[in-house]
Image (cartoon, rainbow, N blue to C red; front, side):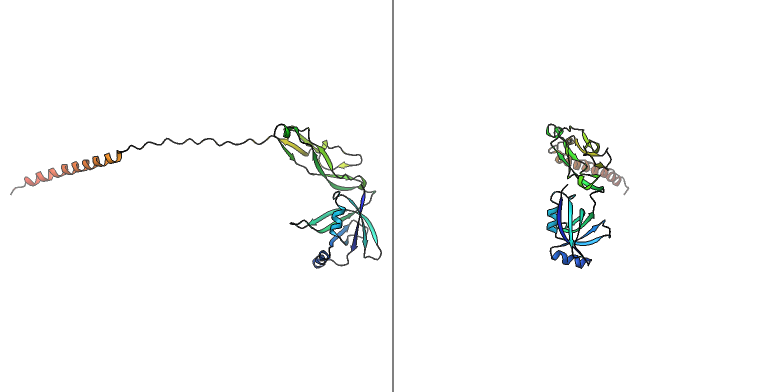
Length: 239
């Protein structure tokens, strides 16, 4: 892997106010870890840093630093880059000092290539489960990415970590049984069952009007019946 150059300055001050002043001056705070003298606070141009990372975050960077007793240079790799939540502009960077003779551990992106036959011919769904692989190798052997061919996957098939072809000198640290990508069957459309409505009894026209006269006649008859014994008892009373 080729290296890119990046200029920076050693910082003698730290803190939130210092970081704000740096950002106003088109610089961002950063720290270089892993050097013989311990962590070194530095400042770099964010646009120059992004340009250096165009080929990937595992790019080897030849970081030249001014501002110390004497200019110094070290080979580093990006460890972490903090960005603004909305616009994504760099806010802070952490670098790891490395040696070309010492193996390091990095995360390498997994890129899927091709259209699975289970998706193209049967409407299946491609699921990209694992998007990075942890590897250990010399800095010169760090791959830019792992390109995985998924065109042969049918519905129900999967590719695992053990299926990835590794170049010599690269060791995968992830479990070989982990799924990288798979094709699942298309989701079945749920059709709502028709709701059976209870039959409605038809209303008989005139039924209510018919029942009301009958009820009135029954009440009138009952009143007349109760009145007759009372009248008879009145007539039988002696004078």
